[in-house]
Image (cartoon, rainbow, N blue to C red; front, side, top):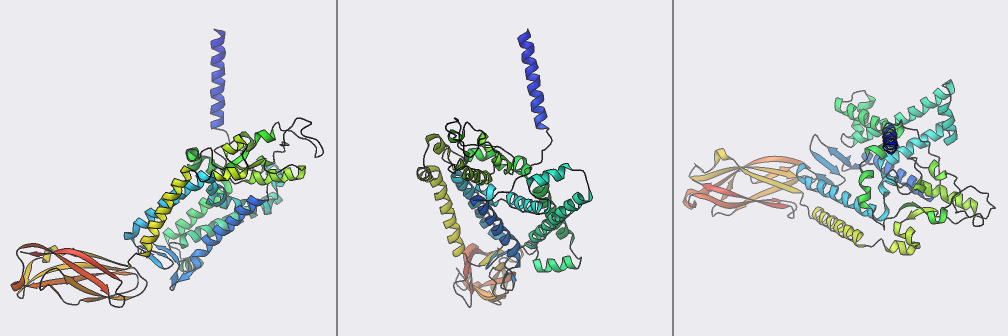
Length: 474
């Protein structure tokens, strides 16, 4: 009876502990600044991604914005290419390429995207840099938050949030600048003449940037991003991840620089907790791989610095695979396992898709046509001839004007009644009515007869399309 009672009490206590952890109030994380190889890579990608993001809308191409997604006109301009709704297949291909790239890079190097190029990581780094410049390093920020409100504290907090809001609003402005010509948008903002949707998206995207990078930070990675939850399905024992080497580091413990760790029966880990202090998600990598780890490698830089000060070899925390740690492989043997069946399959599929899309884009004819019979004017007799009327929808996807010649074939005596040439403005569409006639004396038997309408650029014979349809005889 007592055993059952004790078990029930223990179970209740365990349930209460779980419930408390589920509803635990977030503890603010104060990441310590770190320098090193991987910090340099991370900041290099921050600069690269933001120069591209903020700078791309200001580039000009053919007297227009180089990259512009004009939803109103249903045209997507990407440098010299113009995509229309009919080119949706290329967006599908782009998403497939992105997915397979994610599979490949994750299978090889873990959460490289999360640690170095994810917008959440990038903007968190930027916002943390502002926070450090305004409020000071980790210890100073902790003291400031624990102190009572004062004029000095209020001024620092106000300055920090003002800079954050400025960055967030400029980010929202740039985002909308990809859908509305950014120079026009700037003039509208300066004149306080923004449209409702433009103002909404600038504020919405700015608010999302401010909230995610300034306030939520690691909560986005831990609870909102689905990638952390299914990353284990993309890892295997040969995936390089940020790893602590317990065989070398344990048993851990503090000691002086002159102490002989082996004589003390201790490992190389001095239990300085620097790896925890620099972690943006607040985990202890020494506890093993955790879904909260975004693979930023800040702990590697911090640990290497401590090892250098202690006179120990670097790499107590490093990029390594489970097999390499378990079997004590050297770096060269570990890297040879990069080319394994899983990654080779991903690479082959990705390469094939990229090649197909590249060839398709290269051979893409910037002329599209759609021929639709006019059901109200089919098979009628006009002036001793049988006439069928069609609506030809012509789309010139190039940013150059062209004159196209229309010709027909498929029936003896078939001709175009009216103009057989059409002028097209750059990147434009036009509907052209076409009347096709056959003399009654040459008319075929009743029914539908296959014909072909050809469209060819006068100045460039390589621009041509053929549309098949039928000529009805009643």
